[in-house]
Structure formats: C-alpha cells, structure tokens
Image (cartoon, rainbow, N blue to C red):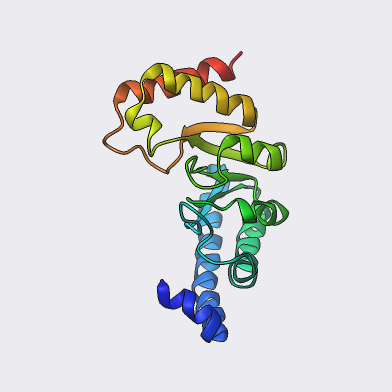
Amino acid sequence: MDNYFVKMYTHPEVVEAVTRKVCEFYLEANERFFEKAGKEVDGFFFGNDFGTQLDLLVGPDSFDRFIMPWFRKFTEQGHAHGHQVILHSCGSIHKVVDRLIDSGVDALHPLQAKASGMDAADLAKKFKGRISFMGGIDTQDLLVNAGPDDIRREVKRVLGLLGPDLVVSPSHEALLPNVPPENVKAMSDAAMKISTK
C-alpha cells in the first residue's frame, strides 16, 4: 500500500493504470452479479478504508484524481441497477464526505466515532439530511468499557443528532469479542425504543 501512495507522486500514470485494471475487473464482476441477483438485492455495499484515526490516507487532491472517479462509476453502476449505494470506509473521512454525496452515495458506513471529525455532532452540522449514516456507536471505548446505561444515553444522543437517516450500529464493521453482550443488547434495545417513538 505504501508503494501505491508513493507512486501517486512519482509515477501517477502507473497508479492510474493499475487502479483502472482493478476497478474495471470489479465493474464487470458487479455487472455479472447484479444480472444474476436480479431483484434479490436491496443495496450495493462497496468501499475500503481511506481514512486513519486522524485524517485521510491521501490528500483530497490525490483522492479526487485517483479514487473519486472510480467511486463515482461504482455509485452510478449501483443506481443503474436500482440499488441504494452504501460506501464503507473507516477512519477520519469528513474532508471528502461532500464529494461522496455529490457522487450519489446514499449512505456512509460505519462512522468511526472516535476518528477526528467523525463524531455525530460534527457530521450532523455538515451533512444531516444529505446522506444517510450507518454506525456511530463507539466500538473503540464505549461499547467495550461502558455500562448499559451509558450505551443507551449515547444511542439517544447519536439518534437525536443524525436521525432519522441513521442505522444505529457499532462504529466499526463488526462487534469485537471484547464487547460485553449486555452492551450489545443495550445498544439494540435503545435504538429500537427510540426509533419507534
């Protein structure tokens, strides 16, 4: 991965060629899948992490040049088949959420709550009503170390900020083994109770 990032500056044409080859493969694979799946698919989930805890893996200019054109093509492809498009990326990606919205992404997953600029309050100020969110309940600390009452309060806070366009879930793509089951239940119960009011 380091070589890919370095070559964005030293050999941009190589990065463009390799990225094109990989993404064209996935565009074709997606087409075949969508044709076979027909109406059995509700949404198209794609992506990869392009943020760290503190910032983007590459600057916005490189993101625009090497990554966004392909995100746009994947988004258009999903919409052409009648699917809502959900983009996955962990990390601090708030600097490019406007670009993702402009490309037609319908929902962003998983809202890494402890990453810089990714708290529900920050995201609500800039993006509420323009994109849906999935996640937002901190898995790095809160779900691991807090009690059920703290979890319920956080679910209420996050839903209050980002609802109704929010699917409450952990701030990473999976629940880690060190999350107590009672905290998972508290998150789920609170989300159901608050969202059905």
